Image 1 (tube, rainbow, N blue to C red):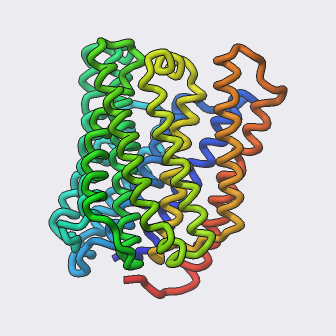
Image 2: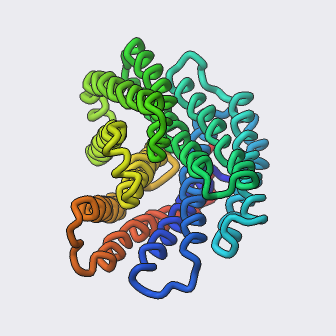
Amino acid sequence: MIKIKIQSFYSISYFLIAASLGILLRLFPVTNVDATYKYIVHTHSHIALLGWVYIALTTLIFHLFIQKEARKKYSYIFWATQITILGMLLSFPITGYALYSIIFSTLFLICTYWFYAFFRKHTTCVKNTFSYKFINTSLLFLVISSIGPWALGIIMNTLGNTSHLYKNAIYFYLHFQYNGWFIFCLLGLFIFLLEKHEISINKKAFSVFYKLMIVSCCFTLFLSFLWIKPSIFIYILAFLGAVFQLIALLKFQHIINSIKADLSKKTTPFIYQVLQFIYILFIFKIVLQAITSIPCFAELISQIIDFVIGYLHLTFLGIASLSLFVFLKEFGLLKLSKFWLRIYLTGFILSEILLFYKGFCIWQQISIIDNYYEILVLVSALIPIGVLGICIQNSISIFSTRQELR
């Protein structure tokens, strides 16, 4: 059985690879790069989502919610998943979407189904708790998201990759990854953290919040389809999704107000500050989604790729990655240095400002600052530097001892 801390180290290593590939992508407008841009984008996104976030989340689920007697069985799932990720890492930069990368991507989907079945069979979760409800729902959304990749093959063989359905299948997948699998699992882990610290929660309020989040996740899917200027019915569904999500946010704010005093006492000041920052990003994310439900803004954002990348990075680098750092630390799987996390945060915040700044300049048809791309490379480089520091810190801790966390 692989050590649980080594599993978490694998996930952070994938994050370092994904972040480094992100810098490589930033270098394309600056200098000649001997690689195919589209292929590196595919590699970057797959290793980020499926290497870092997926492995980190499943490691936390395995550590916190799986019966001890079933843990040896998990090794088969874990190593099968690693083979698929490494296969994608090696094949995507060379071929892009082609035979081998598609095979490994497909096998990865099968591994996710295997993990969900394993979780359902061997979980220690009490099924009426909200931590279980959110995590189980997140895994359901993970399975639902896989409809997108399965549909891509059919669409490419029938309508081609220029079809609107091709992009919509990708957006379907990304929506249920980011807004379903990521957000629901992180919320489930947050609730479990509250339970661990014996912080009482308003069950009625959480029940309403849980239902609102499910409805809003399903309806906000239609925000991803507004770029094709669909029928008014789709606009209405997208708008309803944004409204439900705003109501869910208000309900969550009420919950946060009732627990923040206890939470600040039970966590360190630094972790509490990071959690506060994550919550601000969560609010910003929901507000941005609400704005995109307005037709003129939906069309604008679909035309400016910097806004799209800024939003995706806000969710991935901000909400998801910062939350994973906190949970891995709080549940004993990661050492988290304030110094290296601050380096990471500086890179994240500055790169987000630059991305949205460029999007705003394109929108208003004004010139961007000189050496914009060089500056973007430099500030973005702080992200992998921060992750590298965390990797080195934890490699020393993990590989200098044989102690196994059980």
